Length: 307
Image (cartoon, rainbow, N blue to C red; front, side, top):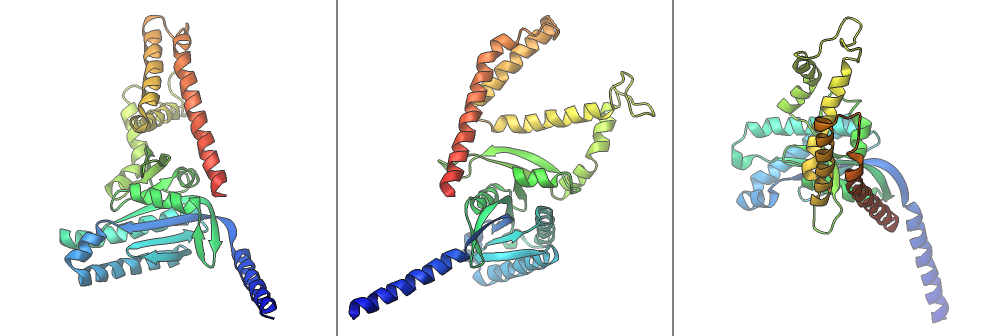
């Protein structure tokens, strides 16, 4: 009888565990992670005032979440994790949160200022009883740890979906490592404050800077017949390259620099019509191809392990 009773109890437990597991489901969502800088130090200095300030800023976040249809998933200490069905609304919410918090911070003495870092990622997660888990969440947390105090760092997937939808600017942050033995994280800083105003004026400024040597007629073409936006696009590509290059590992920088060196010699001495630089550059190009191919395979293997 004891065996029968034990088996029945074991069966009930298995059914309960199976039912619990069936509640977990995968979904694509936008993960929002926020964390306060030097929170432990502030608590050690003045617990009551720090907690009051944290509650005040949490209330600001709650209001912005409600406005942008976000959901606060969980909080622990000074950290917060939320999710949004819209990646555009997630970035808008983050900007509104940081602008509101930063405005209040500027009215406080330095020792009472509480600056938050925010990381946003669009990824696949596992939802269970309202909580979310998985590599998509981990990526958002890593982006948050790399963000500047008072700033926002978004993943490449978030940037791809939002940079044409929002009237704000992004700066490529390159590939950075949050912790040792982790793969680099590619991210983009969201421009805040004066940098945000600069991004709204960026296109006219670029056009004005190019006006000294390129002029467009009424049809929108330059004297040479090329579209006026051609130079603007190349200036942006050059700026993106200059942001990307310093953050690469040394072997990548060396290979890219050597290819650029051979190209420059080719253009200066024989002209681009005779592209002989391809041959001495080929070993360096193969090295870059193998490097990034290995990196993609490693990333794909880690994703399969998580799943």
